[in-house]
Image (tube, rainbow, N blue to C red; front, side):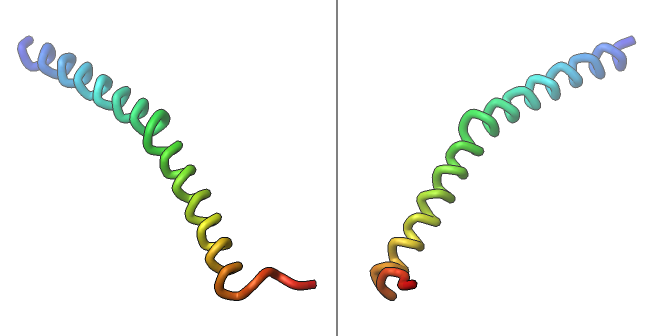
Length: 57
């Protein structure tokens, strides 16, 4: 009986941890990664314009 109770408690702890991870990923990590990647791409384009000049036709 004690084994079954500990399994239920373990599942509750795992679900709580999964929920915290989901919130962390969706609220913090993915928006930060998206912003950094857009800024990084813009920086690369900006530096290429400085080094090689504007694109011509």
